[in-house]
Length: 298
Image (cartoon, helix red, strand yellow):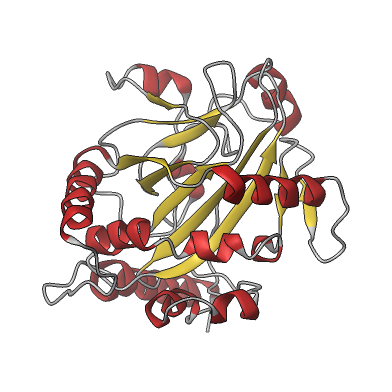
């Protein structure tokens, strides 16, 4: 089998996943049950996701619960946790935790937050699984310096440049673990740009956008700020970025990726923490298979 045949089969397999296996199901029934008030709130969130591509979920964790997480996170980035693996991107300066579910059992609980996952499954209209987790510490940096370090020009290839993900039908739930104000590095997105982007492109260039093209689009970016514990739910096909700022404080965050079955990664799960979850929540972690495919440059 030649390279052209391999590429053709890969494209066919991706198209089958994108257009058939993961499309919204007319027979969908929610697995994550909500009370009447929560159901109304989830319906409102889904309407916002369909229209704008994102929903601001407010503060989802606070008080002693957040403080315990913050302490574990600080220990992790200080190198005091030998069971947790860190990598630093030399181009962006971003530090990532490779096995974030080992940082603290509470992160397994957060990954299965009943209200947030209920929004995800009602939006996808499929049973979701946890596909990936991105836990990172973002240092301050000027975008001009970042471009020099990353070797980017008109169209950047880091998560700090305008892009949409290329993982098919996926939804992210991102949570700030530090306060993020206007001076800090923040999440930003272009509302409504997620439509008609559910199929995965074969070339990453198709998912990247220059500052000039965004400025000429006529779409006003939404800048997302909030105190530690703030959560955002958004379609990964939304054009978005991590807006870096030189005067920012250190920004800590975690992002959970949910999918009907595309582009899943193997996760290092704390089985003890997992056993404490209800059965429906444990199902999020069941299909942990590594699938070859282009990921996002973070």
